[in-house]
Image (cartoon, rainbow, N blue to C red):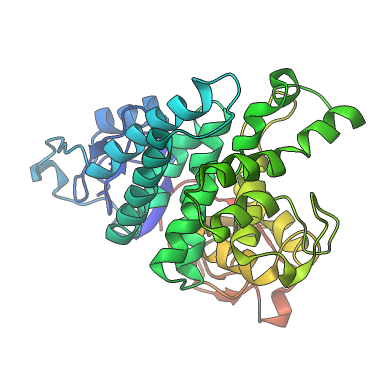
Length: 369
């Protein structure tokens, strides 16, 4: 199995997994696993904004693909309905009130139902996030959409840390509501396209405590959920806000949300900058472990959101290209099989001959191995 950029697909390649749309309002399976691609299908993938797909057989073309069924299989999965409903419900909570003073019982129930859906979907489908995070990233970066993405990512990190289900749900709920305090900050500050003044940043720094007070007043949330909202802007070295606590004084739920929050912020479109790529964001996060982030949580995040899954074609800094065969503890430095005339296998993490070589990015050349 290879992960192939859509621009490099050719007729006759066979899908190794379902391909879903990138429209978060209408998530659907475009083509099902096992289908042999035609030129029309490849053009459709491009039109729908699909970046890459999983291909069977090392990217080689089947001789008899024309005899295979190319009917477009369609089945709207339950998981898509859950995400669409979550977007609608969070919109009602975050955007239909100019300033949230308290959460209604209906709002509390909606958040609880969204959390249940995310936890259930994730348990049923290990590819949950990989299949749908792109769709959510394509949305404008309103606060409630950011919160949904953070909650979904947090569920995956919790799974990597092997937390019990109740802790997973609490983390998801806290992620869904971690920025609700921003509803009481001047909207012009929230959407400002440039650098904030000291006074404006001082206002922004109030949002964790505001959110904590909103949730505390409802009486419906555990201390753990409240801690996630209150402390998600703390840094591991004690330089964050609002309490400037450090290390394991920061509750685990908040340390998880911090990592997910920063990742989503850096990889999302902002008025004042283009989004960072996943690899450069994860390099930044790894470099910030011990200061901004908890190293163990960061490692769990990197395992959950590996930018180079097994089968991915990558370009190395020495201009060679290869296929990822295996992951190391640092997922940014995998074991790679060199593509082309040689069958050389190199370990970017543990082979001292190659420690100066890095993965430059995804390989964008011809797929013929």
